[in-house]
Amino acid sequence: MKITVLGAGVVGTAAAYYLAGDGHEVTVIERHAAPARGTSQSNAGLVSPGDATAWASPAALKTFLRALYNHDLGIKVRLRFDPYFLAWSLRFLRQCTVARLRANSQVKLRLALYSRDCINAISAETGIGYDERKKGILYFFRSQHSLDTGTDNYRYLAEHGLPIEIVGRDRLAELEPGLAGVKEKIAGGVYSPIDQTGDSRQFVEKLAAHAAEKLGVKFLYGTAVEGLDIEGKRVRAVMTSAGPIAGDAVVISMGPESGLLGRRYGIDLPVYPVKGYTATIPLEDESKGPTMGGADEDQLMAYSRLGNRLRLASTAEFTGFDRTHKPSDFATMFRTGKDLFPGAFDEKKAELWAGLRPMMPNSVPVIGQARYENLYLDTGHGHVGWTMACGSGKFLADLVAGRKPEIDPQGLVYVN
Image (cartoon, rainbow, N blue to C red; front, side, top):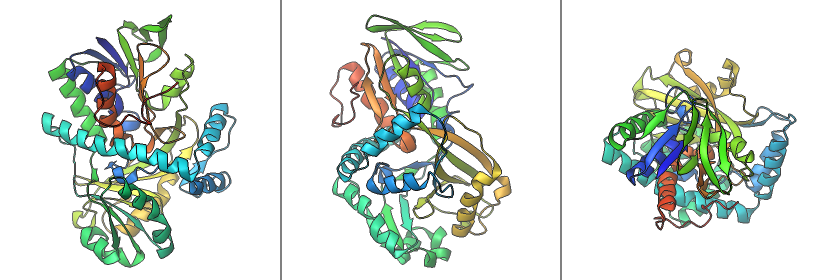
């Protein structure tokens, strides 16, 4: 078939790679001048099945409500008149039960474990390198109370297939020498040995180049999606700033904009943007930086080692489609980073960035056919899009081909 993929982030590019591998003639439409210039440009760098716990939970409900008036939290809610945010919030609140938390986390973990294997398989098949490190990730807590309560979700993931080790501060410092000097500030944590790290932008840029050169995928950069030409139960063409592009099937992988497009055509797609901030900093002294990825669970900051660079990431801010940032937005992040890795970096050399994560109320992406016979979705991956993108691309290709997916589709296939 002739298949048009909307979006050249990690999700859309991975989908295009697998679809082209099945012999389809694939065209990718991207409004930016190059791949991975939206949500996939920068993130914590974590490929993290260990972070598969869904956001919506009884604890998250309390934090969400506190964020309405306390803007110093890692989660920030800027009140504004936005009926879509109100509708999204109500659906999010309905997911904040223990039963829904467990069910949603199981689905995320299943896809995350599968996707990690897909990322590694793509890297092996294509020779793509992306400053990857396969040393695991540490999720640590600063107080005994937060350690005692915070490990519950990790233990649940362990019951469903995630290998973990609960570690004290001495074992943590043994695993991560970069934290040895501050281990007295840490009560302990969770080590997920199969988690890994890497630069998603590098990965997407190289995968797009490979897909274009070896698989014949056509990338149309600097081209905006303006709408869909629909007749009856089928999409005839994608209307773009470069004119209509006809095809046999269309895949929506437009990140946070997916919901905007879907709503115009009666698709129930509650994707809402959640803003996150990152700083990428050259290491002044590599021996003082981390050797693997990690997450400071009390300070709500994640980090990864990307070659000779340190990536810091923090904050989940509900502020619509605003992508702007200012230096003060990164102050807490830098303070935490310097506390953990003193002398490792100079914040004045940081490359600052803010982008939007496409969040679903249940934290589970939507994949599959939607409303029209030849329209597919592969979107809504939220804060772990880098982790789940390749698995969802392969899963989608199986659905398009009519093959039985390699993992259980329960909870993943889109139902409109």
